[in-house]
Length: 312
Ligand code: GLV
Ligand code: MG
Picture 1 (cartoon, rainbow, N blue to C red):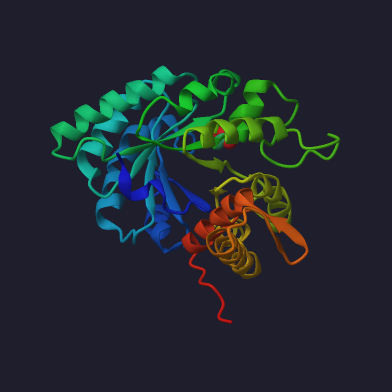
Picture 2 (picture 1 turned 45 degrees about the vertical axis):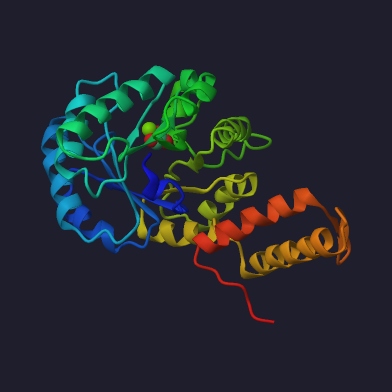
């Protein structure tokens, strides 16, 4: 299901308000791995229904190259969800890769979207399963149910943390979600990041962090991004073209890491297949089957980021 985009890179996921024609025109020129056109929180309630046609027009007319293309619809507790799906998928479903469902609280919400997508796909002549789902975890109940949510549908491609809504749902005493809190001795979201990552990986999903709202502070973004990059996240939302540049770099392995991963694979293959050994020295470290698994991930990420192995 939704085969095209499932394994494409999502280092940078660029958000564009669906009600703003100027931004919609500019979005394809921003070199993000993934673009999502928003019908949810960056669109005012009075603009919600008019934004659907603008999003349809942008999907059909703009040159989106081969990036992942997504529309964020409104959550099931509003009156807009079904209309968003029918109008956008029904009229622009061919190029659209996925829809993003915000504020997911339970597996049932994902299943309901899956069923609605199936009907709209049938009605508009699309292959059933063409449209993937991205689910946002941004409430306490969503986090409690994250395992079931991640296993709810074969259409799911990613699970995303929404730090701003999550901070509100937790009633954290902050006014900006998803940034450093210097008074907190540690990383206030470490548990949440790890919890979502485990649920996502256990179900074969890509795992994405949400927005960094202080858009002028690129060094602080770089610093904050280390938290999810090191844990193993695939990417993060970008609100500006400058953020896209930082994230494409942060979520790619360096050339040195990429080359080392290849060298480990070569050395381990020689050890196991030629010398019949399961653990060998690689420089001053011991490598074994687990090292091979880690190296495979680096190679995959590097290739998705366009790296090629250095000669010699
Ligand atoms: C994103 O949707 C967030 O709430 O952080
Ligand atoms: Mg949100």
